[in-house]
Image (cartoon, rainbow, N blue to C red):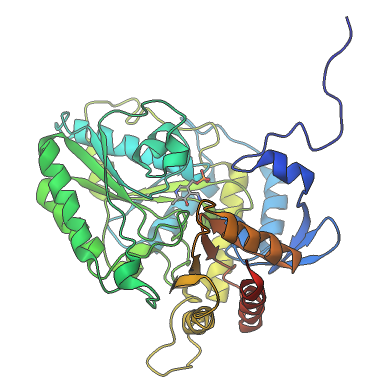
Length: 451
Ligand code: PMP
C-alpha cells in the first residue's frame, strides 16, 4: 500500500486558528524574531508591534530577565504534578498576584489560557452557589459583543454570533444583556464615555425575568477588547455591581485583556473601583512567553469550599499544566519587570500638572484623536494604552475596509489588529512617544488612501 502520509514541507498542513487560511496561504505573513517593540518578518523587515502580540506581550519582546528565568527553570524543575503536589514558585506567584489585587480577592486558581480561566470562573460560580445551598442558582448571564474565549462555556456566555452559530445549542440556561456601544451619543469620547449607565438596568430586567433564585453569575469584560474596545459608560459597572448585590448574583470580570496594566492601572478593578467576586486573567500575566491564566476569587468563595462537605478534594477541577513551573517562572520575572519599570501605570493619564510625565495615556489619547476627520473614521476611543478607530463599513462588504488597512499597515511596518470595521491598538507598555508617533503617522498615511 502506498504511504499517503503528508510529508510536504509547506504551509498547507497547519489549520490556522481564527484565520482565513486560503487567503493567508497565498500571501503569508511570517514573523521570525522579536525584540522590544519590534518583530522581524521572514522577509527581513522590522514591524512595530502595535498590538502587544495578541494583547499579551505587555513588557515587550524577549526581555532578558524573563528569558533567563524561563531558561533556568527548564534546567531546574521542568514539571511537577499539579494535583496533590506543589512546587515553591506556584505558591510564591499566587502570593505575589493576590498582593497586587485589592482585598478580598485573596485567592488564585491557575489555568493555561484565557478560555480556560473563563471556564474555571463559570464553574467556580456554579459550584459556589451549590456549596452555599443555592443549588437552583444555575443561570449565567453574559453580554452581546462579549468575548470570553472559545470553549463551550465561553462561547455560550459570549456574544459574538460568528463564534456561536456553528456549534449547536451551547450551554443551557444562559441569557445576555446588550452591549454599551452607542455611537450616536458617545462617538469620539476621550476615555470613559458619558452616556449609557442605564444600559446596566437591563441586567435587573433579565434577572427578574428568570427570577433571581435561578441566576448564579454575570460575566462582563470591563472593557470589551476583541469586539472593538468598547469602554463602559460612566457609572455603568457600579450599577451592574449594585444589581448583583441586590439579587445575590456573582459578578465575574473578564480581565484577560484589561489586566496587567492595559488601562494604566494594574487591573480594571482598580481603574473603575468596582469589586467583582471573581476575576479572569491570562495574557499579560506571563507576558505571553509561556501560556498561563489565573482566576482570582474573593475570600468568601474560597472559604465556602474549604468549609463545605467535601474534604479530600474541595473542587473537582484543574489542568495537568495548572501552575506549570515554566509559566510560574515567566510570570514571576514578568511581575518583576512590570514593577521595576513602572509598566502597570505607564498608560495612566498625566497627573494634576499637564505633562508631568506620570504616564503616556494623555499622549496616546491626543495622538489617536489627531486622526479625527480622516476619511471613513466614524469614531476614535481610548483608555489607558488601548485604543480603537472605527471605520464606516463599505455597504455589503463589512470588515473589508479595516482588513485592507491591516494589510497596508503590515506592508508599511506596523502591526495593528482589526475586528469588523474597527482597528484596535494596544502596544506593549514599554512603548515610547516616538513609537506612538510612528503608529499614528502610518495610520494617517493609510487612511488617507483607503478606498
Ligand atoms: N477573554 C477575553 C476578554 C479575551 O480577550 C480573550 C482572548 N483574546 C479570552 C478570554 C480567551 O483567551 P485565550 O485566547 O487565551 O483562550
